[in-house]
Image (tube, helix red, strand yellow):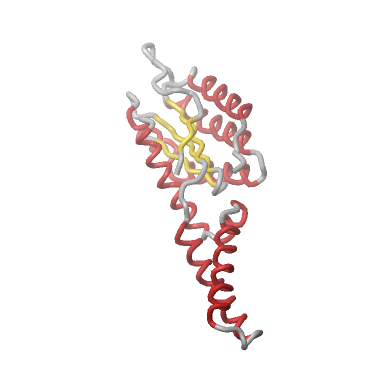
Amino acid sequence: MTQILSAADRERIEATIAEIEQRTAAELVVVNADACAHYYEIKLGYALLIAFAAGAAGHTIWPDWGVPVILWLQLAAAIATVLLCNIPGVLRLVVPRRLMQQHVEQRAELAFLEHGVFATRDRTGVLILVSTLEHRVALLGDEGIHKKLQDSGWQRHVGELAKAIKEGRAAQGVCNTLRAIGEVLIAEFPPRHDDTDELSNAVRDVRR
């Protein structure tokens, strides 16, 4: 699966995080997920549907075919459907958007815990998760941040970043989102005299 973020993209994002964190006490974390779910139930559902349709069509067009031939036809159709659904572009077309977003948000919540974004001193951690398979994003902020941006702010940033990913501008979209959030962080959470870099600036990779 072709990754959304290249090595150069990662360096660019990490440099942007470092630049912003020099001017704020907040901590920014970017996570790259290869995929947020396997979607087995979707693949199996389509495989059964296509297998049933292939069997019905075969029996209608070639009524003299025996049961074993029809069963082999259905098996071949089911296997072909599963293989086709393993292609990322095809899978994105057949999986309901709401389900994809749900899985992306659940993976982001898990990453928020896995990478300790919740454990910053002032509860000012922010996580951006970008998913390669789903071409979707999730944006989470700890309670100190969320109160400042509010729901409308989070939704706007998510929408703009998702659009950038669909247009093939993932790295630019992430950097723009970091800077937009950074403006709020710099104003609301200025650096303290005893600040330390609590979380690494490196782009993290997670698996489904």
